[in-house]
Image (cartoon, rainbow, N blue to C red):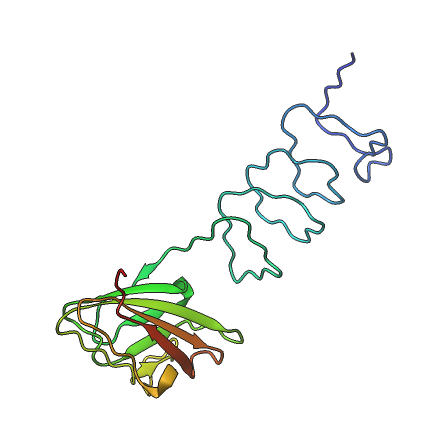
Length: 204
């Protein structure tokens, strides 16, 4: 076996990289500032991929966490468990729901301050349908004002109005001490919402 010990390998003209027409077997770490061409075969372990774009085909990728910034996924098929974290809304007379955090929120309104003035929705996504579920824990003195809603993201002086159209034409009632689930949907960046409720849960 021969050993080649050099600091740099270039092509014969000293103008670029050499070719390996029969391939190359590398034992150890191979470092490259850029990669061009097709990857054929299996990449057994990739510790970190800073930027991977233009991936095509039908690869099987196993990962622990996938974080996307304004990512778009088309034709997603799930086989297994789907889980989502919930976000607790800070109790206030006008609680703020940051839609960028997710789609499931909880609010403890069993004691003051109650959402008696209105609701404020921020970061409502544009040009898409957005829905969310709000679980409200109620108490004996809980009061809720659903007719005063703001969706003015980033506005220092938001404008409140009656933006929710309720199923059945009436704001949801609730039984004190029992959870109230509110389901809201908008397709115009929060200008209008369609709402319905689930109440009075009991074991039967």
